[in-house]
Image (tube, rainbow, N blue to C red):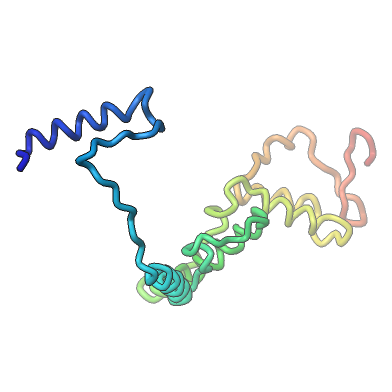
Length: 178
């Protein structure tokens, strides 16, 4: 029987012979060595399907999409769809935290996760542009105020050339009349 030092020396020699330039080449075994193929039990497939089922159940219990756990997400998802999915997943937890803080502090608490999800404010800007478009729900001044409140831009940039409101609620640029 081989001692631990002899086994370590054999292992080191084997690794040395099969690494570096010899990596990936055919291995020639001594007559005293045998290779036995690894046998996989057919029940492994059942186990894996059970794991997927368990992940789906865990996702349901926590109110999140099972694509997060199963790794089977839609590869065609847009950033806005993923953002929406993220918000929907966080919302139950945020509501619980808001409720707890409101109860303990005696004041209404509203947590804003939009700043965590819309880091570059592109979603907010897109919404504001659509509200100022053809429907003209918001005027330019209102949009500037919203952007200023959210600290998206510095209102002093326009202080030297303020916009002029037109009678229809839209704005005109004093420099070119548009």
